[in-house]
Length: 297
Figure 1 (tube, helix red, strand yellow):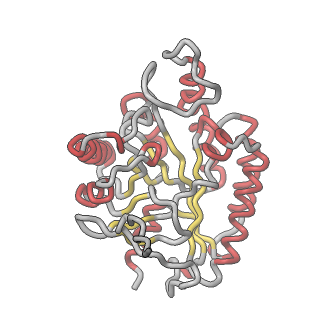
Figure 2 (cartoon, helix red, strand yellow):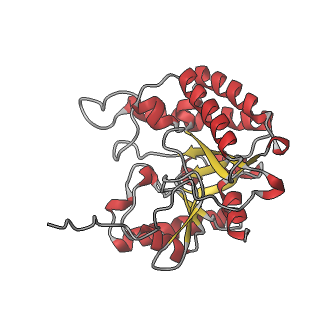
Figure 3 (cartoon, rainbow, N blue to C red):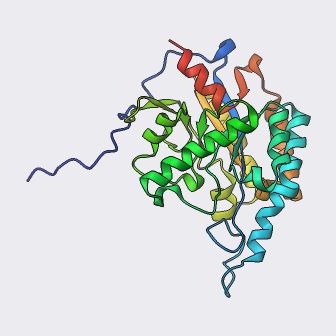
């Protein structure tokens, strides 16, 4: 009996990392490194959210977990902004548009320092993959329009809340005018994806060098997380001698903005920020990575 092939998404073909790209990043850089800082807001008393503790036994409102996440917007994110200023590091700020209702000054402050604003749905209290096609399409368009209205230019990149997709999402993103997505974490290089509306670039976004699954889910200590960041950087830097690669560092201020973790984050970022274009390292944003990749022959 001949077994049938498994169902495939049809977005991209398999390509091993050993098939090298004959490209280079701007100014001869080999490794593009970006910080993806997630600014998120959650509905009070309803919807899903990351929990530092088990859900409240008496149900919603779950004040403990809601307050923990809110600490990130009131305290942690501002401390991260100060840190990035101290180290002169750019950031890709992955933002729910509900931030503009809840604490607009926070996102304004990152935009004012020249950081890229990346669309991240409206709230992390919902999953877009569970929406009807009309509702999902409306969400994507509304988020893009809201950020364009606020900052004078539309966002070019998207990360779904909870990386939740329907089978229609990539096509909806391209149709709405987005250039790249961070949803698909399957390579250390950007990769063009096929959609119903035309090509959409996938820019690598980390699921390991990411504080939510690592610290919140797997209970890894901040010191160990810093070691993971450091080892990932040096290993990818060595591998990038063969072809240009991407390293992302995904952070959430309600986690790494806690003072004891911020202190460790400062140490590792200060160390790595010492590597510059002279070492083949390009500190940048996902949008700049997408533009550079698309413009290279």
